[in-house]
Length: 218
Ligand code: AMP
Image (cartoon, helix red, strand yellow):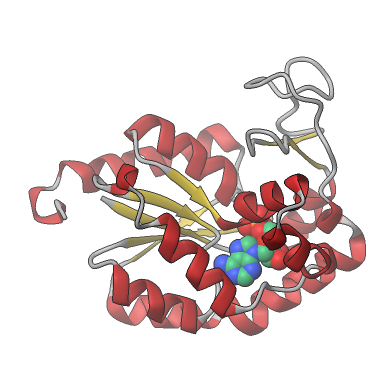
């Protein structure tokens, strides 16, 4: 089955989609993680997107659509996928529609003040892509990723100016997708304001019910 994890920056798309990918054994595909790995490795893609991402702007659609198309052509997606952070614009959603039928959209919702607090306390493992929060979701050993032992970093785009830009890009370019998907009736909204375990329990039940429904087997 195919799932898109949707929501503003800081709602927990990364954390929830990684958990879902592990639980339901479907590949986790995060455009943000792909871009960050390219920046870390200094590839041509990384060089092209570095300043855009650090400023908190969106990478142009043509580049992002091509990247996801290539990723969704790999053989590990045969049973489905968990897309994290894509689509983020109407043209990206139209491109995904052209390539993939019957995907579900999980819309995670959190009030704005909670988003700012989450982003400013966030720490990330640039090796495996796992996110932490200094107060709400700290790693077992301070500053070290539980999963792979890499030292955690503050994302460049979690600086205050970049956070402001990311939220404004979300409102202008990404929020219109809520109507786009709601009209279609395939969007499931989950409040993600509570702690990660509470949100995960609700999300897991929603995903498990869809997985067990024979009408949804696509
Ligand atoms: P994320 O890790 O999903 O918050 O993404 C980090 C940054 O990568 C975003 O602020 C954008 O600059 C860029 N990015 C990730 N996904 C997309 C996308 N679907 N479209 C355009 N830019 C993206």
